[in-house]
Image 1: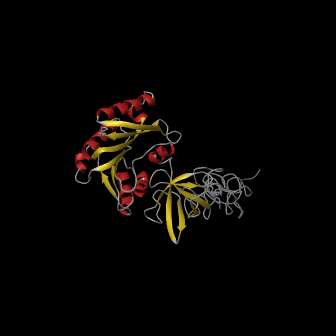
Image 2: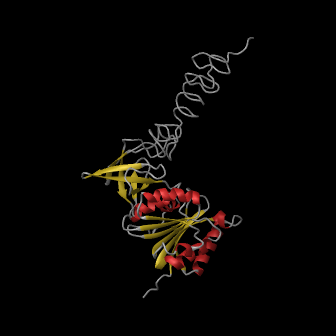
Image 3: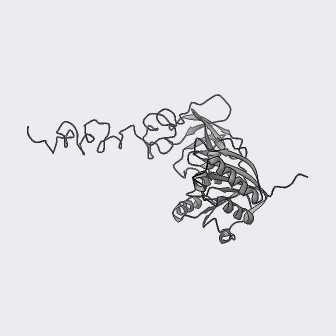
Length: 342
């Protein structure tokens, strides 16, 4: 029968003989074959070969592959391909998880203002939220960017991924008012690495300010790097349960956004509101049911949190669930010390 040839030929031999490709075949066979399409040692691509990339939302068939349109707005051309990566990024040049979908460079789409101030809609094959990029040419978390030429000036937009931001998910879920707009002073509790904070920074603009509080030092480092390029973000690496520790840094604010995912979340929001939120201001609170009571029904948990807010001088205004972007999550908007009708 003879022994297998462990050296192989220049055609990519390996453990299974000269003709079937080995671990490091010269022409790119995988573990079991000499196909030029991939495998661990293949010449084209990573684990899945040339079509594998880590493209965009829509995978192989959807994504934001634009078609343009005849309705009003700006015509925009995409800067770089793939929602998370592209020809020069982490994904395959072909975008999508296994196909040619996705918003690829050079395509044209339409950008229109959203009903939320400071937010825009990018209209392509699928619509997406976007904000005007305060730091042109820079992305924060590998998000897509759109450039618009308008009367000789260029405006860049950053696509806002609702699967990575509770606030964007609430907008997609039909929230009536975020109470975040140009010029707003915002206290953001649970800022994490600055993904949503960066979009809030775009929304409030140069005249607004975002006080971003994050307890984790690891996430705080990423937040600091975001804040270095955005002068309207004040990063605070501190525990939101102790607002007195950062009372010298934060002034009175118009809105509090909270995404702290703690069992005593309502108490944390109330403590900060008593210190920093103006009368008639608003709190936008993302509630994760499992973090408060994993044994109760989510609807019961949300109702319990709303009742706690009522005890702390909040008046609930609206509530939306975050399906299909997050499971068992809701966003509640409440007004603090609401002024009575005259």
